Length: 203
Image (cartoon, rainbow, N blue to C red):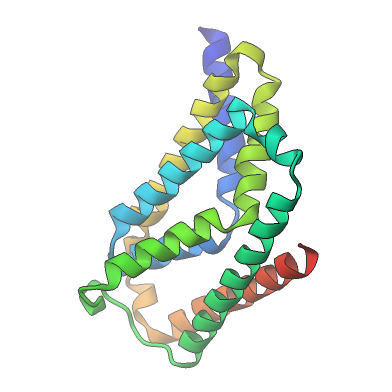
């Protein structure tokens, strides 16, 4: 029992250390959390996607993908283009900032947010590197307890996205000001365009 708990804790810590890093996915979850728009849907998509990818990594799919390196190239190109476009949209918002509240969301916005969340998750090569390859390889070292390690990492993903999405409303007072969104969207734009360009150029 001690080995199981230790392995699960190691998976939780490793998964959390990778997921917490600022990225497109986390920026989207934070934004939706502050707006209180489609928060549950976004959290479920992110956590469930991570769970599937981590499970694939633990199952050994990472080794199969390594045998076909062109797959990662395709994902890098698609992900790079998507991140650049998203970064340009964030830059446009930064030049025309406005206070965002839950009631500002149009009725049809939920579907667009969910599609953007899916794209940011499945078209981001770093997600595959972190979940399928890195976590998968670390889990493999755990032998018979590799699935326990994987479950710990999945739990970390669920806890993080739930905390980020539903806890973001605590920042609603600060981020209700247009100037705050100018800074946030400016940082997101710079990060997304830089990351997208790097992915596209190095694919």
